[in-house]
Amino acid sequence: MKILIAVRSKEYSSPTLDVGMNISRYLRASTTIVDVGEKVSEISSKDIKLANEIMDSWDLDRPGIDVLEWAYDYLVDNKFIDQQDEGEVFPKNLLVHHGERRAELLLKGSVVKNLRLILRNGDIVDELRDEVQTYQYDVTIIGDSGRRKMVLEIVRYIDSSIFLINNFTPKKIYKILLAVDDSPGTRKALRYGVRIAKAFGIDVTLLTISKNKKFGEVQKKASKHAETMMRRSGISAKIIMETGDPVKTIIKTAGQDHIIIMGESRRSPLKKLFLGSKPLNVMKLSQTPVLIVK
Image (tube, rainbow, N blue to C red; front, side, top):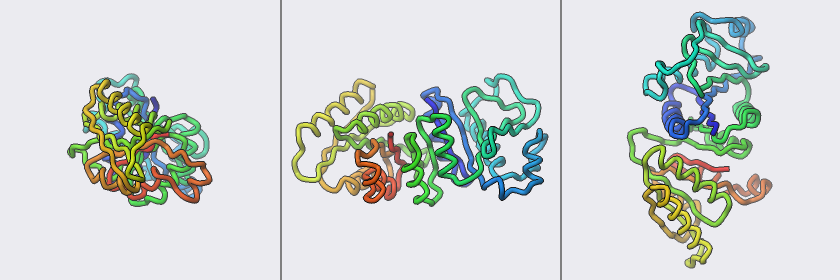
């Protein structure tokens, strides 16, 4: 599995790194940390020249480099990576360019297996989309810096699953809220639910919603199948059957102590654009982390 963790600032990114690296460590995934900075054309020619050279210090104030260096130090300090397990090391700091808008940051003495630090320059949605499409990530993990409209654009236009780390408190005990129906999206979401529940050692709430007061056999069967899958995976799961508006019910049930996991909407791209979708509307309104599985 390949995981992309998008960081933007030291202020908002520690919860994003906590969640992303816990999942990555459990899955032994290949992980890339990316910062999308301002367009290269907006950076002085002097800084560009320096960025292309070997750097012995961080006197260079190119946007994003300080954030990536901070992210690496954060992983070391919180024991997500072990410097003693490093392979070959670089004698000097390097910024290796892969095209005009993408560069890999190689810190002096800091090569760690399955971890890359990437600096991109340009529009954040365009750059993340290009990164995901080019390097085929399975999950993109992003923080909520208050720009929810931008987050929704990322969900719409990026092909990987999207995990929004919204109001996440590392020491808080969460449960997973899995929205269950009979769709292919739910079947994919269940597999991710198992992985995340095991990564964090938490229980699962399986929520099935009917817009009317009756639940069909298909809905009941889907809930039972989900519960059986969790039980066989060694995960404690509880089934809840509710009636009402799906988005409002999910938000209410989740509260602020669940991580919501939903499959991608079955609506056509055109309908999703003009009418939205349940996952997008949940992500728009939620006050807790949300994973939309694609």
